[in-house]
Image (cartoon, rainbow, N blue to C red; front, side, top):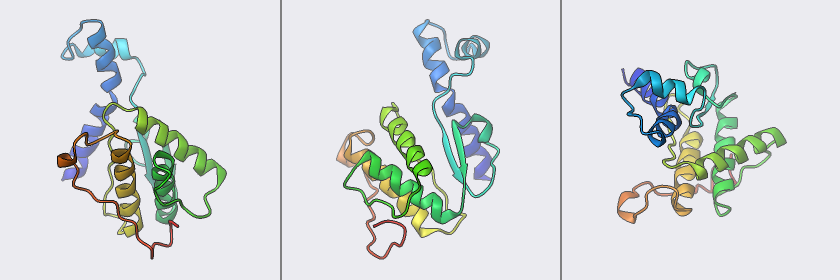
Length: 164
């Protein structure tokens, strides 16, 4: 059962902002009540795309539901807004483009950006989109500071119907 562990790790990860705020005030992170009090509702951003609601929606900055193809299109747009050389999606509506810009900005501003994707949907395009986001972040220097750490090549697929 890896899903509950990943969900717990993501819940803890969004609390990072409160932990950093507490550290600035010279409090230890094991002082949970003080950390929670200082952080209030301040959290590191978490964006979720899914075909239905999730149990993490309550900690997400935004949860976006749609068909897997639209999720992949959004992912390609995020990658493109991080790195203009990344393949751009075709036919993206204005609201989705605005969300992609917001996600891209938060990923670029994150101290330790994280992209999580699964294979449950069986969508090759969704995995390609996640790979392109990670690659775009790498190209911009946001993750994998050394080439030795980077083992995830960009997957630019000319047969991909979602990205141009």
